[in-house]
Amino acid sequence: MQFGIFTVTDITQDPTTGRTPSEHERIKGTVAIAKHAEEVGLDVFALGEHHNPPFWSSSPTTTLANIAGQTSTLQLSTATTLITTNDPVKLAEDYAMLQHVSDGRVDLMLGRGNTGPVYPWFGQDIRQGLPLALENYELLHRLWREDVVDWSGKFRTPLQGFTATPRPLDDVPPFVWHGSIRTPEVADQAAFYGDGFFANHIFWPASHTQRMIALYRQRFEHHGHGTAAQAIVGLGGQVFMRKNSQDAVNEFRPYFDNAPVYGHGPSLEDFTQQTPLTVGSPQEVVDKTLGFRDYVGDYQRQLWLIDHAGLPLKTVLEQLDLLGEEVVPVLRKEFAKNRPAEVPDAPTHASLVQAKYGDQAPRQATPNANRGDNLTLGSPYQDTAVVDSSKPGSAFGAAATRKEFVR
Image (cartoon, rainbow, N blue to C red; front, side):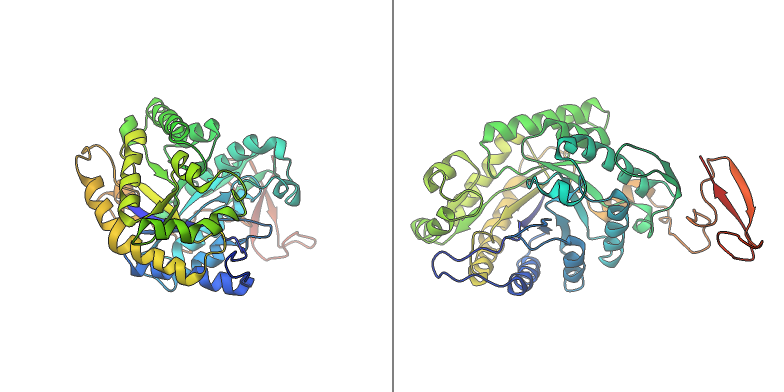
């Protein structure tokens, strides 16, 4: 299993001091959190995407590339990447680039987000959220796997003889998780492609998460990707710890009560009873997290939210120390017990390369590989008309024969 943390990147006033960090302070603090996650032995750091206050993470790939340059083992991911309001062509290129600069230490979680106004901000209709998610991912999936793509759909202009650059590292796309809180269609989408499914998990009771994961596993098997037990599952979680349980409750209560998402709602006690939120000692976190397996089965990735609601950086780093020293080592050992042999490990670039190539050398993109050229070669699958671009008035004005392609 992989263990790590995710951040929603909120900039929130500390209710105990009245102080609100600046954007710059919060951004730099998040990078420090990611670096410390690696230092304490965690596997994954995942970054949300938002385009509205009080959140700052509008460009996850920029931040993750910076973190990649300051880490060496940390798997970098997102929580989530908006598949509905980002252009899939730009996603294909941005995350392939991040894959290269991180030497393969990247995957991503795709989702629709939870901010309705983001749709019109990016020229989309929220009423088309699900069709957008399905169509955009179909294109993204192809752009990473086909050197030259001809495509047309409902929500963007067609592509003719298009090659996304750079090509994925080793010709193996980043692994994709599909994230959802409540949408069965997203679970089925993940199963259809044989991708991972990540249940946000932090706002809902166990019974809801259990149903979503069961649906995904059943559909994963239905689509022929393996048994239900071989489906790739990730879960969110949320923790606050101190050595003494009551100290944790007393310290976290004002942050919980004023949190931008669930503040001024259910009590801390009700929320911890009804959702995966754990506020207490490291042993309580271990016990509750081990209980997740009882209703979702053996799974591959566990991420926790630890840095929201105005918690100061010092406190967050202390939470990481407790995770690294007292929680994750125990969970690694306990989750490994009685784990069926058919349950796969969490996917990594190395494991995906091995699965595709075995002992063969991975395919690499080179300048002379003749793998598609958006300007001059176009698609090998279309009828072509040859234009002599050396003639006056040529669209390209170059002294070489080029091909233009028309549907």
